[in-house]
Length: 507
Image 1 (spheres, rainbow, N blue to C red):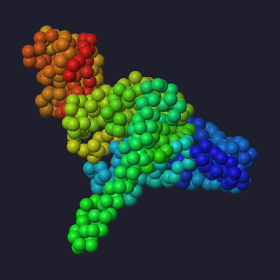
Image 2 (image 1 turned 120 degrees about the vertical axis):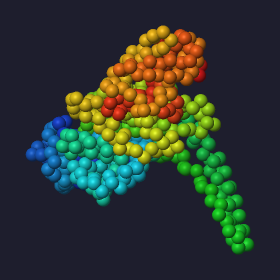
Image 3 (image 1 turned 30 degrees about the vertical axis):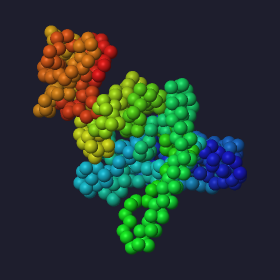
Image 4 (image 1 turned 90 degrees about the vertical axis):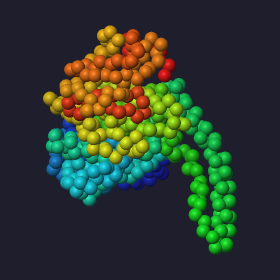
């Protein structure tokens, strides 16, 4: 037996095994060299054929092999990918188009079936050129080589299991481009960003040691939590038995054991990178869609560094340069005042997310106008997916004469007792008929007070009662704010702050 990465034991005469994305119905990335890899017996000669081209290699001493097929154009005609060695493996119904990784936590995982317009959407979802492969939640202690999954073509019968944000994105991209779209649904509800990063990436910055420290605390606390739960379960069982003996109803729910805080738990740093991303590297892709952040909202300063580091690391690991990385900013959510007495935790987290825009080839979907502040999982994923598609169509596919983002503040200046902000991407700047109440101004003391605003062309003029010398402004700087800045195409402005320069703020 030969031990491979991720604990996979390879018999001396093992057959050919392909990496997890090479399954029937796969979508391969067009216009890029196509890496194909897997395992076989050490020293076995391997040939891979697809699209009229054949490339060969020899499996290494550890049984691993990889070849790169030459780039191929998009093709909607199903074809077979054949791998030949001591045996032959045939992958059928393979298309060539654009592959997008859909990753993050529960809001990316939320399915079409759970979307607010699911019935109508599902009935009309006859898109055989859109395909998804969904991987199970699989945290791991070490980098894995394999993960189960199957490609599924989109139909009224299957689309209910697709990522809703991913599906609406793919539907629009496929409509405009006409090419097959493959969605790699790699999401896990509740997951923090550090679980999606390699240990090497996390250890590259001393600041990230905090993630490991939190995990060590959780592991250290587990034995006592488990023991306390077992005592509570024993007490419950005695009380239930006594009630039954007396013929009484007993409806109290049985206590549960805590999740095993072992090496595979999703909160462990690197656990999802090991189990769910590593097996996919370095599949050829067009880009990455990311919808996550809720699990890190209490640590926004740390997240700003973690998120950018994760983007950089994923791009390096896929090995295809600065592939497009488009992400969704947090929606409005009304947190428990006890947990967040300032009411601004998610506003700060949105700003932390936006800092990733400093990286090249990134884009952000503004989502705080997706208003259901009581729901951590807003059901309108059609708007999210279509805004992601707008970003991609302009920034990745080069579509002209189309807006893809909301108003962007470009410059701030004073006019008397007002601050004026000039915007780009602001054709038809308007408030959607709502009062402009999401603004605040601060004077030199740094204390923000409510302000009002009105629009003149591409500019907003903001004033506050009894504030003669404003020096800083912020917009929608709360967990829940009423959006009131949109352009003609209906894209909202992101929450922002601006100053001349920004003072130190005290509230």
